[in-house]
Image (cartoon, rainbow, N blue to C red):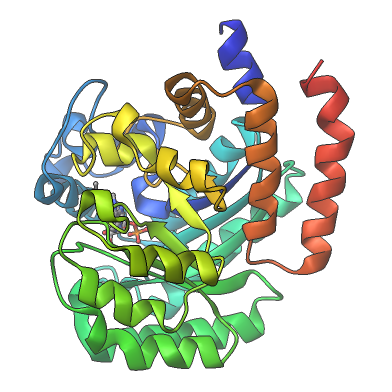
Length: 347
Ligand SMILES: CC(C)=CCNc1ncnc2c1ncn2[C@@H]1O[C@H](COP(=O)(O)O)[C@@H](O)[C@H]1O
């Protein structure tokens, strides 16, 4: 590991935008492949390697392949514990994992089992004494429409009340070119009213001004991507003003956006726009397995692309604590941890 890589690995970090099944490492995929040789899935179908790019459609196909490999409680437990351990090894001190509850008739997996298994993985990792605090956001896949969205909110509400603070919020994700946010508004409103925090993928693709405007009225607690919000890329000043006025943090995933070709290059990434505005942004991985990255690498790429110093990156990782969905007490504990680590990381 060179000096830069070592610094970013040691830097304490907060990961707020990580889709569970997109975060499965190559090692874990190998274990899944050997569990299910009959599926005839090639390792290369589960990730987008270095220097490779794909259309958005092709990226979403990769998730379908991974879902075939992860279809039992046993798989979910292994995947979730591996992902949490890997984030911990990468220097992530606080992680919000998100995942879409799935029902699999063949293996008799129910959505409730799915959620409970992710919760079990988080609890098991707690007993391992890893230096990471993990929370869970339950995801709505926009492809599945109004009724499933409402059902997912009810599930999230139930587990928010029974998981001792592990389920903290709701994510809206899935192929951004499918469905319309207006159909999901009642479910999202209900989630907000019952105390679930909302992280919504907004303006991940161009020409979603109307949907974004509508969903910004909720308002969400955080925005995933927000690639096409600002006027220079076809968004609008009024959208930017709403995001700024409500102080809604953006979760930014550089490699994901470059590999999925919604931004042309790292240098063109909208991190620059929002950072220069002084608006809260959080660097995240999105799908560390699919995009073959980790959070240390994303920090390093942001720093080298935009000429930011170690002190700047420390500030960015520290400010991410303000954007977490867990309680004020957890924020205070993390701030203390950053203070304690400061002398040994920024020497
Ligand atoms: C295509 C591309 C560049 C992807 C990155 N941006 C994304 N945008 C929207 N939804 C996503 C993205 N990455 C993962 N997801 C969602 O997360 C799911 C995988 O994780 P999980 O099964 O929810 O545990 C996908 O099926 C999809 O619903």
